Image (cartoon, rainbow, N blue to C red; front, side, top):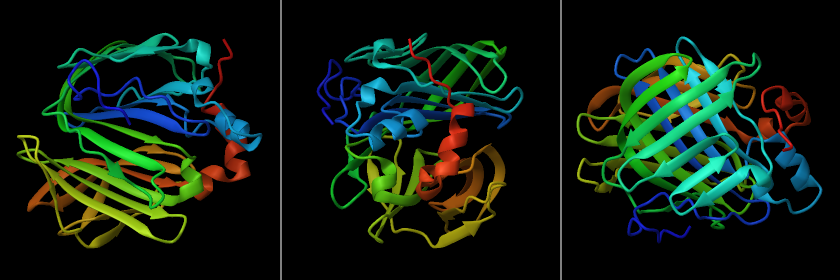
Length: 316
């Protein structure tokens, strides 16, 4: 992914254009200081979980720019979820901003600001307002997730501050957050069977675990400590821990020094679960965000048939 931009290579790289059948996404999550609220926002070019993009890929090489999306999930009370697939004409962008439909994300060199105006499903309720993420030192290091070099991950800020000011629903809170980017030249389900990922804020910095089970039978495991000064330290991978499955039966696993447990399930779908977990890393017991993805389930025809109820498409 090109990293040259007006912020001397330290910006998010919004000018990246995925190839046919590929994708790029920018992800942020946050938990409030009292753990009562949380959110996840993902800006997709080539929405990897879009049933419409999956259909287009089956018919031949598909244009990722014709399936862009800003996914917003609010956790706590009230909880809302929006993930509207949009065509290329809904997309505008430059080196420091992306606009998809009525929502936008922009980077001013110090703060990432999201102006949100989405409609939730299944009940059509508005998600409107601002989210600001102030990162710590921006990381430039990129990790390759598969042997063929199709999939890449850049954890830009593992320990960030987040401010949420929403008009609809009326929410205002501050908390700790995270910001990264993934991009690839092939669908996820082509190269992965499943993965587990988690990020945990520490007293100083944060820890991140990535455990990807590849389609070829190999496994990619990363255990990283992000220091407050921006340094990244590769750590020995802690022992595997299996946690309780989600209501949809998604396997949830992680690595921990002294065991781990699911504190709360934030999002539970037939192929993906996002949770709050309590774990021990770097000698500290703390709570963080965990996700599990089952690519075989996502690719299954019954799942593809029900996804449009959660992922509507706007054609204009």
